[in-house]
Image 1 (spheres, rainbow over the protein chains, first blue to last red):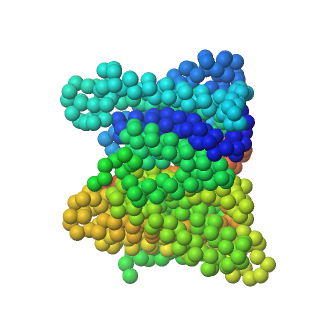
Image 2 (image 1 turned 45 degrees about the vertical axis):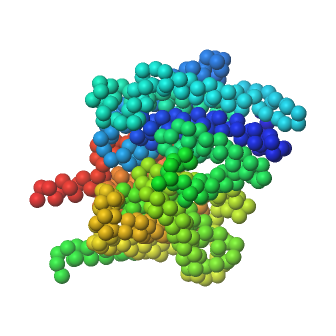
Image 3 (image 1 turned 90 degrees about the horizontal axis):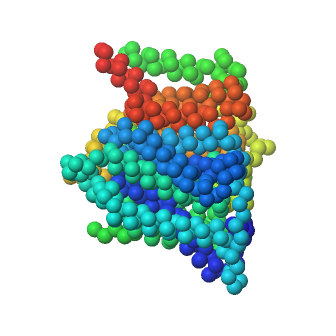
Length: 293
Length: 319
């Protein structure tokens, strides 16, 4: 993998395709957050920090226990899924009847905890897996395999979640609760169990994202801050809890970042994306795909 | 003159007299920091107490600090003019972001996430314009060779203590003015039910916008003061999501619905951070935030009114 910026600088088309590849991972992140929001009506401010813990998990298993990547990935996914369920059990559940803003602030506290836990436990060094995937040359364009792999895995992950939601009993129950949380309890669905399963599923998606991101980025305790805000923006832009909207917004954002980064520094790509977001709040305040009143 | 006024006057005088009696620089430095941050936290709580939870205040603070410092270094504009310009910038930004939010009824989670984007933008812009702002490495206003008052740079801790005390007291006064005004009832009604408040004749958008702008202006002033006092700012200490969350944490711990709650929060957080730093040195890196985070979660679950809020509630209940 070449340095992240160098790949960007060559061609417009290349930047666009790289944008699509980036969009895959962002869509995966947004999907997990949307799932939590849509079903439990809670925003996990610490979502990106769960991803960070997953990345450390990957690093630890691969570098310390010398396991291959393919063994480490499921373990890391399970770890973050367990963490997601634990987060719901310990923090969200006691607050479920309280004002919704308290739940959000409590997860803000968890953000502090996870970040400083990583600082205390692993130090502030940048670490990476030491796995370097080759770069695919297609004509004069270059794509790193890690991005292609990330896009592919994200796509598979999303399809699996789609079928889980559509074809299984639990998935149906989750979708039903998202529509009306009071009535479903009366229909004999154990909402507590469904909430826990949803949280674990959201955590698992964060874990999957962690496995993919760790191939492209070094991990350090504050890595969450570099893609956390963008994930929230994508969810809001798509409409919180709106899966299809989040999906579309992820690719839109990725293209803006990627193309913006082509003309200038990568930070300006982000600034452009943020500015676009605020502009969109004027035009479509309830999300990209929401019906206008 | 009733008893209460006398008590306040005595406490006020004692606070003013403190630096003339007690001149140890380190405790004074901590006190100044506590006062400046208390002011910032108070300005956050002006909105926060009405359910307008903003994570964009890190952005306002960053604008206050950076605009003042940039004007001074690059154009030689005195902070006396630079700070008002910075306040205008922060106020304008607050209007631009908050107006659509309130106009289109973006509340709750949405509002938090939109304001989160705001602090993200300010942080990214500061980092991206590193040729001017020094990026993540931080930025230092140039030491003045001329008049200290024009440059608003004092080496003397006593002067800074008095400035910070004055600004902090002004913040508490503004809090009380809002608390006694009609706007408070309007905003409380809005935080309960926007539609009902609108039906009762409250101009929802205007009321929310006004408190947001007041809050943003105060936060920007806190940022500018912090910059002038510390003479060093970096994106991590005055802007971004971490600073915004730090404000939320301090206010929630101190007590969001009482005037001195944010101040108590600032005392606790700064004392905790300094205590850990002195006690454990570099080994303590990260531990203060770990404790903050755990405390924040515990407080929201078990003591949502904060330390001071719960204390006052218990005392008044006994009477």
